[in-house]
Image (cartoon, rainbow, N blue to C red; front, side):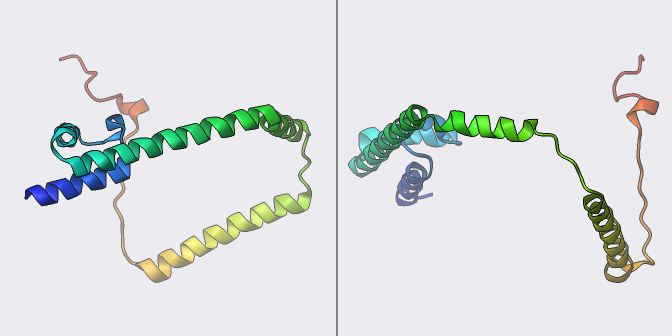
Length: 142
């Protein structure tokens, strides 16, 4: 890979992952980025812009969190959710009938697709090994 391609890849990584090298997925690229911070002024400027953006986002996040806590919004939402979940629900017979109809319809459509689209004359071999009957691998004494 040429030096120009490597620089472009490092700049793309800064744009994608930010200035915090702890969020970068490739450790070898982190070492190259640290070396490029000292050697390449263009990369250094891009990294500093990303670091500035990270700080601005963190500041905005903290401000929004403080404002939300000050307004009491999270507590109101939590109280409303707890009140909603504490209320007992009664399912009507129509709701249970709708659920049963949906299950029957889904099973019928599945069977129809299996026989028409996939082909009903194909056979499948399925092997199921039950660990309760056979035990887990590697537990037998030699």
